[in-house]
Length: 175
Image (cartoon, rainbow, N blue to C red; front, side, top):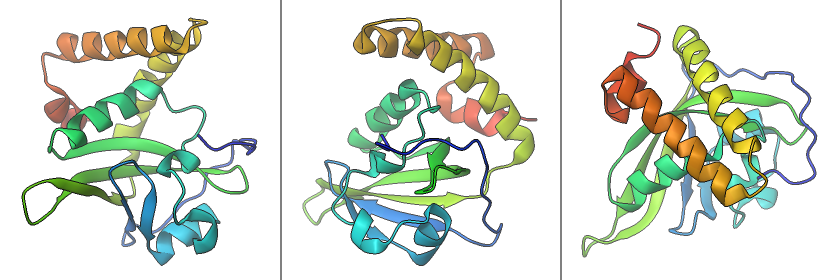
């Protein structure tokens, strides 16, 4: 998570025609970022390369979402997710992320690639409500592992009530 960065509560935006791109190794350390990533986040390339991608994780993002994301990509599947990231100055920006494993010549996962676009605002309002419930559950527990486990259970309940797997749910929010 973004250490020593105080969240300002101010949202930054980027253009609908812009795509934020990053690549990581299998441990989530950043190996590539594009200029739009740098422009929106406010970081310099030298501050980002080699660092854990979680350096831009906003403290208001529920850990259960990242557990789901990692479960998907480490099993070789792609995932789409709404994510709030933190900028170097403490501002935040929302993205609709498409994260995929990068496959090597022998079929093994050698890293991950993420393209992030501007989110649909109507869908984002639904997602924010779900994320608030997940975060509330995480923070209810003193033990972070227990908080993650219970938050993930809340996410599973939301999906169960929607009668949709995550892949369908994420595309249906805001409809």
